[in-house]
Image 1 (cartoon, one colour):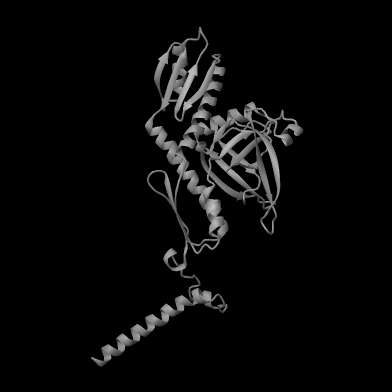
Image 2 (cartoon, rainbow, N blue to C red):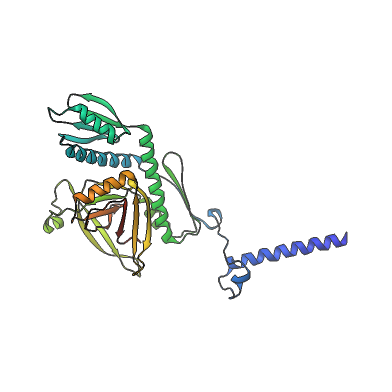
Length: 330
């Protein structure tokens, strides 16, 4: 009996000592050089209930994503009809997820419908009256677009939160296009909320090459032009030191919906960051056409209404892959 008690005491003491050893890295960062070879160096990460932080439930503006997609598809459809020698009178968004196509007299509307049904199988004809057609996106496609918008927002949040050095952030989609965000230990709450809240679609827009610099300064611009800025940061303080204005065409040529994968990589020679993008099948065709039609023009990559890069399209880019250089640490 006494032997059993002694054995239990030894086991308890051993467990306590082992637990204390595991706690040491959490209590102090000054560990002997040999510690990491035989003992763990990871700290115990405290949750929100123990160390405080941020708990947010955010909602993605799915309606805006649907509007942007509808506008983009309207532009695609207009180009497709032009290629088939059937220039439309108008192709425009009636509302998010609904298109109006108006054709000139004499155009065979059966051919127009066949083209649209082939190129946009997820959009269904709801009204056909004379030379006017109304198409509406199917519910399954609408849900896919909304889901993609949420996934893009989650990825954007994760990339931004990385700069805070949070060891165990929790960012996960919830029902109803909502996103749960938990950031244990965050001290600068205002800055974190400001950064997280600025979620937006990734957009590709052409830089206007017809704007006079004086008009850019005065703001006297055509209705189809907007001014957005590229921000430059001090490498030490990370404060904004300069804002470079760009006159962009408001029309969005492409969104992140067509990107299958995007990763930040580093140039093996100079160590400079760039974004490597792989497009899905539709995106590859669209990007091929965009670059073919706009060689020697600048294509701006816009996120959160900020220009991250505006490279010149040197040649047609096919194959479904592209690289973009610029400032991606902001």
